[in-house]
Length: 146
Image 1 (tube, rainbow, N blue to C red):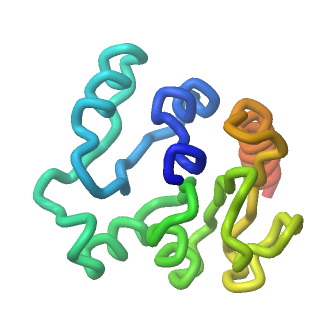
Image 2: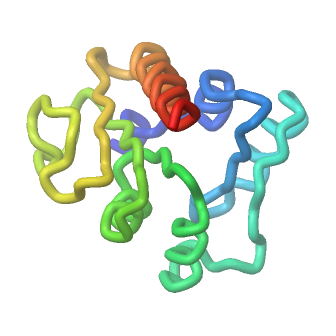
């Protein structure tokens, strides 16, 4: 059931909101209302490309993914596309997940650029998002030292 694997945009933004981050929508389907609500509530401009067909134009989506510094997503096509492009990707997996991601590793056997963050409790994204935030901060500090 998809409700177990989805993370609300608001919850994601609350945990990752930083002044130097820009968010780009890679989600297909009509997510306009959710994006507008988050934009209004938090004053964050989530960049969208209304003319891009996120679901059926793989070339344009691949170009957009390639232009991003980091991809954060649940298990969907975007993760596979980003992984195949070698983009640094953070995969948010629900407690019950597809076995292709292994059972408990934090790396992907399929894509070297994908790091896995796994839920440890059903429907609880708080711990996983905190771990993700700490990972991003730690890696950002490493990048700034070089």
